[in-house]
Image (cartoon, rainbow, N blue to C red; front, side, top):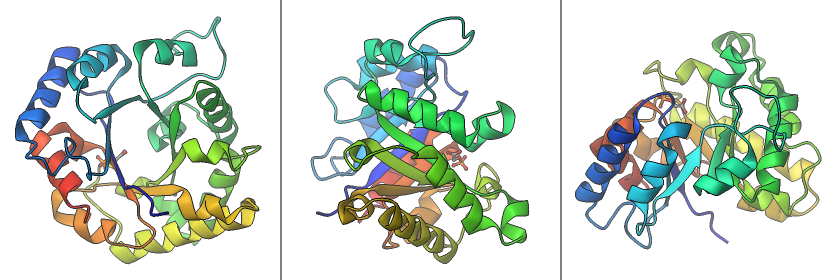
Length: 258
Ligand code: PGA
């Protein structure tokens, strides 16, 4: 079974509801049938801020565009100021959720353990998880990339079954490439993606997990470098930050999937 490509836009803390709706309108207007509105296209997801979700979901209604959140808390409810539960995400109607983005790990104390708790909560609520992993520049330069990636993958996926893995998408995002304009070369990215796929093979007895799990690349993916990255055998799509904020750039990346 061929893996279906996924192009996901991570809007981060950008776009009010009005701006988000305008961006979706722009995407719909610019789509020429070879992007998100076409049957054979990759799965296209946008992940706006929480307060923008319902307006974006309403605007995307009737198109194949899917909408995801940028975080989820592991508890059902309670005294967790500033957090959002799975039931709240179900109610608003998202289908996907980004978990463990490096900005959450760097600035908000996210750990492999909390990533795993959030993943389990998202699965319980029927959401597709886009789980982010990636090494810092210091880790790459001290030759720790694979050790860090292995720790993050094993931590995020602890206790998950092959059945659970049907709703997991991994996103390899080298921290040094996020928002910096410094993209990993096709070869650097492919090497880590192949490593992650090998890891999945060793972690799950069914070979279906390694074969079917999509591994996205993220970190300064742009229209100019997307085709090379997406042509790599173990790169199954992209998680796009800056370039997801402009309809033309995001759709050009979607169309780079061959
Ligand atoms: P970038 O962000 O495309 O702006 O580098 C990617 C991400 O953080 O998901």
